[in-house]
Length: 399
Image (cartoon, rainbow, N blue to C red; front, top):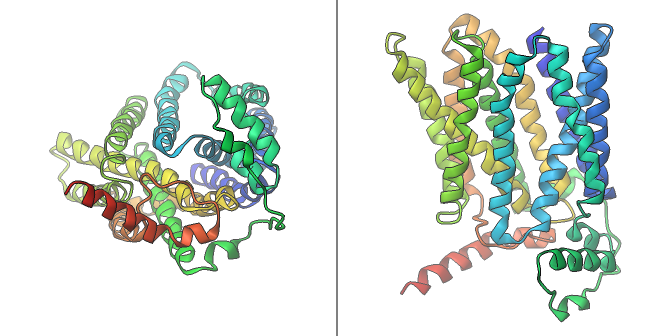
């Protein structure tokens, strides 16, 4: 039953990626975010009091759909509102709060004896997020793509005022093209050569990150030990991962840490699989290193994905690529439990192969460090050359 309920939730994530990701690019980020928060809350209540297993599965699926809408839309709103110098900070801070949630969850599970009580504890806070209607503005970038320049300018003035800043007069000259704004589609992500390459690599990266991440988390439940403590420790490992990202992506860039973290995760999984059980401290240490690596990869793919797509396609593109994350989540429980029944360490070998391949592939992505977010598909097509020019300029500046 565990693998089925987890798979249904991830199937909901997958569906939400296609539907709500598209809706956020067409109807606005904040509107879809608020609808999604309401949906998560209402569906969570039904799940907690479901009269039978069928109703439970249906609304767990719907909770996954709306949950996807909240995660992806919130992340895109934040990355579009802040400047390029702050994107990496806010992106990682969001992931750190996800980590704090993981660390708090075993405490909630320990204190609340029933699964219904746990469900209510993690559901009810979603209704508080509806207050963001009065606190979080629509993305100015999205408004500009929808020919709403005046509203975008008003929001930027408000943000500047709260920050004690003043907008330069040339911002008042914002003009909006009369060109009809097309709605996003999958073809837009694969029509041009560089967009196609980035999309396929990112899809694989999302799939690998989710499969390994969820697989390692669920593995805690089948290897014995104190589940509450092990789950807390596995979450605590993610805080150093966030710190390492903050220390590296502004100095080294996004691409190299992205590749190294995947390769470290893969090698750690492989070593763990063949370490003998009579040295548990070493086995646990190497396994923790693998969890650290895949957590870094998972957090970096969020940032890189949002930086590689243009404004008109960003929410749809991030949601669509991350749908492979949901596919990985659907497969993870079945792969873990079925392969572990053959040999406990067999899933780790599969994880190691997938991670190392991913580490090699992401080296073919352009470096986005210090580069402004692309606004059009044409901007994306020139990212590679733009990245090279920036690197060349930085290299010559030291001469």
